[in-house]
Length: 451
Image 1 (cartoon, rainbow, N blue to C red):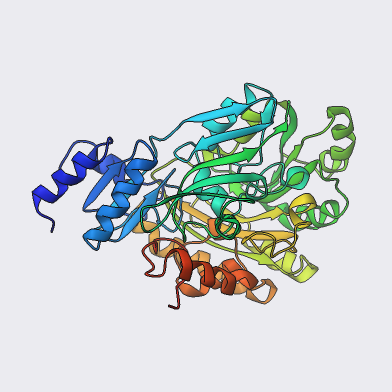
Image 2 (image 1 turned 60 degrees about the horizontal axis):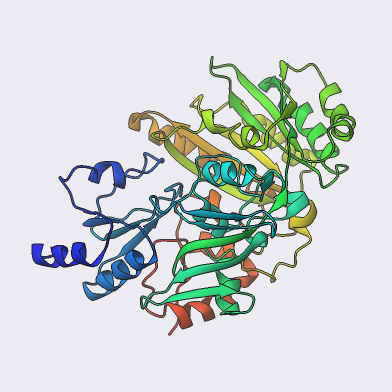
């Protein structure tokens, strides 16, 4: 335990509040959306800027404290909070400056997707950033950043122009194509392994209303819908992004749905989406022209904070008939009506035309990302939900590739980290040796240094 005087010195070194157990705001600050994670940091620094981050890092090094970094706190693996260490909380750092003429935005990493989108949409602009508006921009971007317009504009990492990074020695560096280009390569997919990213500069695109929503079928029709989804996805243009999966309506009715976003001309989009909207006998079809902000918050009601969450996810090698049969067999069978399981994202277009080694994010060649995103409300139900999720994943193992999108995996140790970084892992180790040789930043899907 630290002496009170040491914590008072930390308080004098930062502008933000320093919270300890028993103080007002401590429990709220340490809580993250995944209620599976219940950890108690020794202290939480509510940072107001990069200087507070640097001071926190220096303090943690001096006192040999493990550090967790919180932006939005949405790491399903719970990497944004630690036990007994120092939590660097950037959730109050919400500055953003949009350059409408240059089509760029500089954003602090306490922003959520929804906050970022509302500001950029004020100028008719946007960049690909996830699909749930309450997610923090930092973790999502540094891990890859799949979004509704990835096929037309690339992943979030593909649209990062520069970043401010506080490294393990407390230095503030700029990472871009011209400054520290090796670090710039590494943060775009290497998560938080090399430092704390305090701001990100993004490329923006003109983005007006989109044609978006979903078509909903009884869960019992999952097999037929999956076959259609596979065949339809092979023909769609870059303007269209689709995903499908099993979940429940608020009244508990299990459904299997196909969600869509068409980001081009609405009339053309109606024609492109006609095969989907004409397929089968859906329970409902709510596809319509909506604002981009509405689209980005479409899934929000299904992911409220405070539920317990466990996720298994891998890219799937081939959505062949046998794989479809196995996946369909799990639809509507989750022990919890709050789960999205199974669920499939279709990856295509610009995001898949980037070379796997161009950024640290390597997963550019797989068309389908499969996940079992299990959510439930009571700790007494944890065992059966975790067991069911693992059984599903094991049943599909023959169809999965040895690669995972790190933003979608629970904490499964070193094997998941290697799979997440794939062929880029060794190069990331070299960067780790340079920028963080003591593995100071290890509350992440960790790349271990070898020096």
